[in-house]
Amino acid sequence: MNKTRPVILAVAVVAAALLAYGMFTLPKAQPADAEGFSAARVVEDIEVISKEHHSVAHPQERANVREYLVGRLHDLGADTVKLYQYDSLVGPKNKHVVYTFDAVNILAEFAPEKNVEDASYLMFVAHYDSRYSQPMPKQDTVWSYGAADDGYGVGVILETVSQALKQRPDWKQGVKVLFTDAEEVGMMGMTAIWENNREVFDNVGLMINIEARGPWGPALLFETCPGNEKVMDLYAKAADYKYTYSLTTVVYTFMPNFTDFTIVKDAIPGLNFSTITDVNHYHTDKDCFENVSAKSIQHYGAQVLPVAMEYLTNAEYSDKDFFRAEKDTVNFTVPALGLLNVSKTVYLVINIIIFLLFLIVFGLESVRGRVKAAKGVFKVSVVILGVALGVLLLGEGIAYVCAAIAGAKFKLFGIVQGVQFDNAAMIASVALLFICCVLVYLAGRKKAVRAASGSMRASASVNAASHYAYQYLYGALALMFVLSLALVLALGENLMFLIPLAFATFAMILYHLTSLRIWLPVAIALILLHAFSFFFALAMALTIGALGAVMMLVFLDFMVLIPLGDLYLMPSKK
Image (cartoon, rainbow, N blue to C red):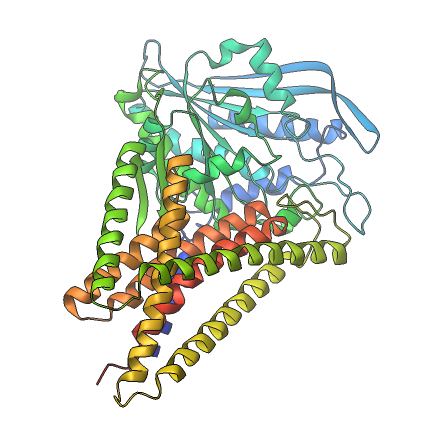
């Protein structure tokens, strides 16, 4: 074995992990004296907002937060600040307690400095109430301080508006800020203003809603409006440090969480941002000032402020209906590579090209004898699929045991809260899965080599190992091909299967054209760049309750990565 290859492979894997998890890529939190967006200044607002519980069950504390926000908006120079009060609202029953309360929304308006007739507006939305009482496993009922949910949203909006006002003479559009009340009890503040004061939204051309489902991790653009083509074009053009997957909009529809944007997204084009880590801080007493992450806050600003400035200063968006569209895009980010944002038609063409290239290279490999008959590859694919289903069941079993140990309520493929060691359990499960996959693969390869050991040719063992790796690789890729085809036809989205299929296929083509093995670790690194980032987001969003689904998808990637790595490390034929 070439002694440098293991080092190169290790470097590729580690570099992919560091880039994917933002060690070198996410923006550095800026201090309070920074000229641009400053997470430190946002933290100062959050410290005030999260000083006390301020849910619908805390009317005086909520009023204190409201008074502070009204003062901040006046300090920023709002043209108008209005309160919209809705009396005697009745919230959902919570542990046999029904909250009756008054909801008071705050609306501030910042018009363009130059008189613009019929100006359109960018509306920022966040809620200022914190979560009401929440029962937790093996704990008393807890109350959130609302530091992240939604202190992040409120603070980021205040800082974004403050920065945007520096260029107010260049505004072609205006800004509205809506801080809603009673979001935590079923978006009642937003529902009330939408149903009773619809005129507030008449000239709104774009909405940016900011939420937080946990205090740390990257800020994810997790939802857009239906017909998001033009909205995503704006995001792709303007935002820095982009982080989004159109698939999350699909996943989000199956989750029990909703935001203020849910009420209006079919009528108003918009973007919905949130952190998604971790669920055990969400709606609990751990959502407090001590757990605020300045780095996460800075990531909101890096995306939201440039988008806002592009909207406010570009006359192209003066038509409030500019962002209305009928088509959706397919979009996803690969760390270090950036955002792919294309129409569904273009994405389908990309799929067809990748499918054809795979079929061509698979056919050539068969002709050259590197893989056995298609029947053998099909057999490998079926075995991998069967094991993947077993991994799915195993993962859900592990999740069930973890929930039982923690005293948490287990929900099959659902949100499980209260397992304090969930992240450690998920990481350990995936690590053990990888070790098992490698051991089983090596055992199978050893058996194949042993079967060829009686040959007179010295290269027989190397050939047997090579054939085994090729058979394994193309069995996994053939399964990826089928799954990619099925998903793109059913949902129009298949990135979790298409990306490993694409990068592995390109690597094998380049390897055979150039005889350079370096393309194999390059493919491994690119697959991992996406996998580390995407599976992190998926695991954090779905929680340990969907560990089986995450492990199954990770397992399928392992089935591509392991033989690719083996082919790279394998000694040359003599």
